[in-house]
Amino acid sequence: MTPFIAEIIGTFLLILLGGGVVANVVLEKTKSNDMGWMVITTAWGLAVYIGVVVAAPYSGAHLNPAVTLGLALAGEFDWTSVPTYILAQFLGAMLGSTIVWLLYKDHFDITKDKEAKLGVFSTIPAIRNPLSNLFSEIVGTFVLVFVILYFTDATIIESDTIIGLGSLGALPVGLLVWVIGLSLGGTTGYAINPARDLGPRFMHYILPIKDKGSSNWGYAWVPVIGPIIGCILAALLMMALS
Image (cartoon, rainbow, N blue to C red; front, side):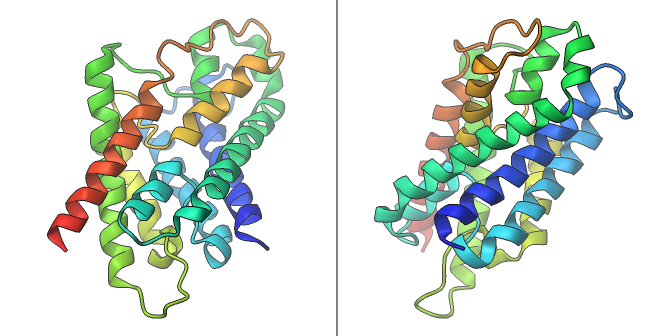
């Protein structure tokens, strides 16, 4: 398996399981309807675990453009591979969200809440305040990338080691994403990953979802720019402290 394919598959599994739990909680007449935030954040953490397990041996399991950029900025990942990784992550996210829609199509069809349907694909702020929402995404992504940089830096042993989430082992990464969701995710839904939000949001826009409403493009810049700023700050602080 090539790193490109590994990032597609890993991100696909991440979004399939992460988007899947949101669908299971917010759409009508599902088995887990209204089960709440604990169920969503726990499944997202486990979704990261699954994606990392599969992709780690082949790509380092970044699964997130913010992670890829953060590692590259810190000098721990080859810049020439950045575009390929990011493309793979967006493709995997788009595919994963499409399968979630197909899997839950009957429930999408009977759900009247348009915002709930969008929430399966992309993040929606609890209180819309662009600057505050941007700050939330910056902080959440900063924690994600900063911790990853410290763990990966501590585990480089061989010169050909692929640097990324995989060098941590899968379980600690899942726990990291879980605690970010529980502690910091209540404001925006913690995208902390441009591919996780923008790719599925695009699929919401183009798929023939019944009574889907707006894809909320006016907010779409927040879960893209916020994580980029967060990963830059994490990389800069890591280098300053090294």
